[in-house]
Image (tube, rainbow, N blue to C red; front, side):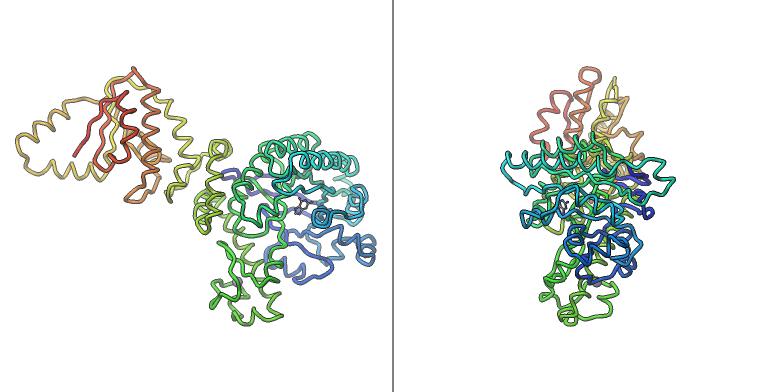
Length: 524
Ligand code: GUN
Ligand code: ZN
C-alpha cells in the first residue's frame, strides 16, 4: 500500500500525506483534469491555484498517435508540462459513454506504466445507477477480474523498488463498482481489499452527482468505505463540484478529480460553494478571486471569458477544499456540512442520510474538544450526541435522584425570587422541597439529555452553545435520553422528574413513559 500518513481527523474525514513517485501530496486533494488535446488552463496555472496533483486520461493520449509517441518517448509529465504528480485514468468513462474503447485492460495499464503515471487505473466498467441487478453483477465480475489482472501487471512496490527509485511502478487504484446496490458495493470493496491496492476509488457515481441524488451517493460511499482498509486513500471519481466536498470528505473520501471547472465554464455556469449560478442571471460577482476582482460579468460572458470562468471555478473549488481542511483541523466538519447542506434541499437530504450513519461515524470520530454549536434539528444526530446517550448507562444511581428541565436562567430567577419577601404558603412549599434530599441532581440539556450537575461544565454539554429557544427535536432527543437513564437504573433509585411549562408540548408522548420510572412534577 502507498504511504499514507493521517495527520488530522474529524468524523470519517482526514488530512493526510500521500507519497507518490513524484513526491508527497496532502489530501483531501482536488486533481484538476487536464485534457491533453485542449489545455485551457496550463499545469503551472493549476499549481498557482493550489493543485498539488493533476489527472489526465491515458486513453485519450493512447488514441492519438502524436500524443502517444510524445508521452511514450518522454513521459506524461513532459506532455502536460508539469513535474507535479499525475494520475491517469484508463478510458473507463469513455467506455461508459461510447460502449467500446478498443483497448484492453493490459494494454492501457502497460501504457500508463510506460508513460510514468504516478497513479494508474485499470479498465473498470462503470455500471450506471439503478441498473438491473444481473447487469450490475455481470459488470462487477468483469471489473474484479480486471482488477486482479491489473495487480499482476503492476506489482506492489517493494522496498527494493523504493531504493532503486524505480520509475515504472505507479501506484495502482482498485475501483469499486456495483451500481446502486449497496451489497454489491460492499462485496466489491471487500474483494478489492483482499487483492490489495495502493488506493481505492469509488466509480460509477457521476450520474448520481448530476441528478443530485446525494442520499444514494452517501449510501454508496458508506458501503464502500466500511469494507475498504481504513488507512488507505479513497478517490471519489467525477466529484468536482465544491458543493459535495464537505459531505464527501466527512464520509472519508480523500481524492477528487475536477473536470467540472471547465465543463461548467463552457456552459457559462459560475460555481459557488453553495451551488451554481447561470452567468446570464448574475449582475454582480459574489467572489473576490483574482478573476472576479479584475473582470466584470460582461467580460466573463465573452468567448475569451470561458477560460476566466474556468479559472474562477477552479479557485472556488480549491477555496472550498481549504475550508474543509481547516474544519477538520478545528474538528467542526459536521457544522460545515450543516451550513453548506442548507443551500439546497437535495444536499439536506444527503446530510440527513449521513445522519443515519451517525452511530458508525461515531466510531471514527475523535473525542472532540471544540465548542458544540447547535445549528438546528440535524445537530441532534451528531456523533457526540449519540456517544453521550450511549454512555448514560454508565451511571449507577441510588437514593433520591432529581432530573429537572430547569435551566441556568430558571435557577437564577428562582434565586432572585428567593431573596424577595415571600408569602407564608410559598415559604412552606419551598421548605418542603429543600427538606427533600437528593443524592443526585441531573439537568436536562437538549439535545444531550440528563447531565449531572457535577459535569455541567465539561465537554460536550458544558461547551454546547444553544439558541435561546430550542426546537422540539432537541427536546425530544433529550427526553429519550432521560428515559435511557431511567431504564438503566430502574428500581435502583427513586426518581423525581421535574419539568416546566416550556416542555409540556414535547412531553405529551414521553411523559407517560417517564411516569413509569419516576414521580413526575410540573413547576409553574
Ligand atoms: N470517471 C468517472 N467515473 C469513473 C469510473 O467509474 N471509473 C473510471 N475509471 N473513471 C471514472
Ligand atoms: Zn471568483
